[in-house]
Image (tube, rainbow, N blue to C red; front, side, top):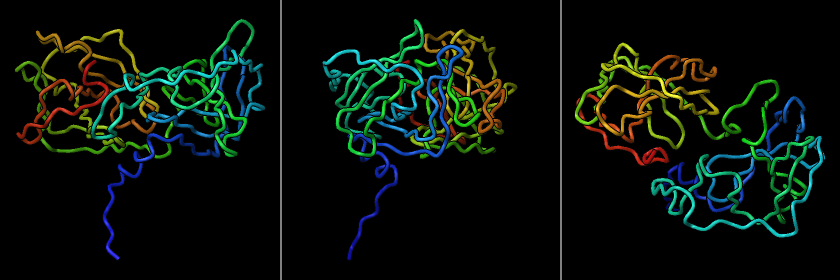
Length: 285
């Protein structure tokens, strides 16, 4: 029987329009203030349709605070105007982490978890089937802290089907901004990450221009807290064009203190050959 090869990415992203879930054996905890309000060994990761990053859902009985129905009306589902169009990933706009939790693509109802005067929104799915019956989907950003077992989490829950590889490379990396070479290196660390373009982390000594630290900070569930940097180049796109992990998580230790540039907004060459700018959610930021 003749068979056709299937790209693994297509297998992973093919069900993007479906409600997806994956159980985890981890103990998951979340706090509001100093109070632990979620403590579960029955958590699941949930991806609503069009979302590429999961949220945690737990049985309502594992929420150690009142869960209050906000109203009888179901949550409004969002239309095709919301999201980021990435043809390489999906023919519909995807929801990256910048799309707020309140934008739902599954039928359900908004509930609130209360801890004294603090109220945070959560989401109870309508008719999700027996696997998710009585589960409540939690807004990661609404809580003050999260832990997998005793390990703190940042950014969002970790996806078991997502990984990073960091490899040293002697390939020549050249980065230009508005015609100015801002960095050249033959000792970069190449960071390969599921569904994302390769990132090139360079020693600061291989950056030719001054870098000014900005107030912009972002978080990655796999790499940690990123400090953003603006190269001293007379170009409007230079603001927050680079970043560095000063104190990375253990999986990203090999890029500690190195500098990466948004290749979506610079001219990159590898071994002298120009590389097309990737299209990602960061292309327009």
